[in-house]
Image 1 (cartoon, rainbow, N blue to C red):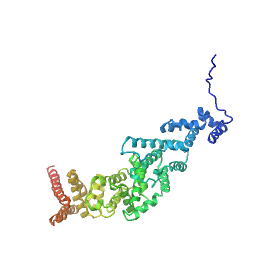
Image 2 (tube, rainbow, N blue to C red):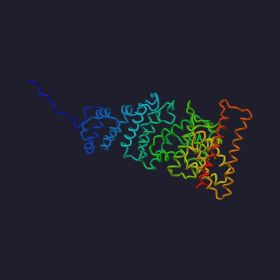
Image 3 (tube, helix red, strand yellow):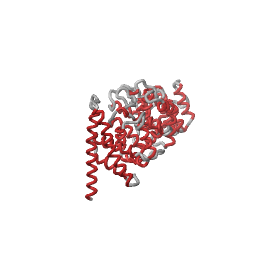
Length: 451
């Protein structure tokens, strides 16, 4: 007669552990000594710690995050698992350099992994004070060299800081401003970020190019680029800029958002000085200015933002006025008008008149509606208090067109030709801009008369 198979499971004795493994013994002893822990673990109370860790290996990061919400005890065991070598190897993926092209499935998957990991840590450390949460998380993440400020030898080809930023964004989403301020201060302490910023803003531009690049990458990839709400991005940008005087704020803004070399990623300091630049070189700066102005970021008034734009236009030296005009157009109508109105109020009508000329030139080059420049001038005219001031300003605009035309004509007449005929083409565009500008003025005048 065949022997009957015993289908019942043998439970691990509660009085002692059969295994001699130290961690397993501690686990069992803890369970034996605390009946409340036994009840919160449910059926998991019969498992040795090693088996629980094996089960966790088969769960996705998202599922482990859900499991951590079951009870405080389960959450604590998951924290212990993360701290083990096998847990950290599995969860702290470090294939940051094995990606062929940005935007690939592998890159997206890696960023999503760290988003899920940020949510897991958020849930596991929910009951800890902010300071303790940050210390614990920093202890775990310090094992990843590419998460450190200068930890990676090839930062431009590394996704490490972006993954760190995605993790941090998920972790702190929904935290109040005071807690986020503590996070920023904690990061500054860990990375010595404030001292590094002081070095790049107080020394000669370009004298510490590699450090400038590191500051840019850390601020963009870790602190700024992953937020879905503009108000959050404005908060973190404010944390970066506000501790510094206005002149240093402008320098930092240029380092973080200004044009960079496509070869080595380093900041190009002469871009705005040596010749007209394109939209791509200014778009980052314009978006940052709009971020501070449009979101009504705490600690920023309209005057603060306009002063920052004014200071930015002389970093590292005074920009070509065409580049300044292009930045204002990209920054939007409100910032552009407020900037121009500030000049009108402060008696800088001649500077304002020349700016009108270059606004018209940029509109001509980029095929924007010249009607916009004329209407902006018309709006600025209303800032002047008297008819005499308005008439004088309009005369200054006419004179500015003549002066700028002569400035561009002189090198052409003297035979000074660039290899790409840039000077001649600039003059060509200016003459067309002047013609189209005056055409729009005539249209506006005729419409006013007929109405």
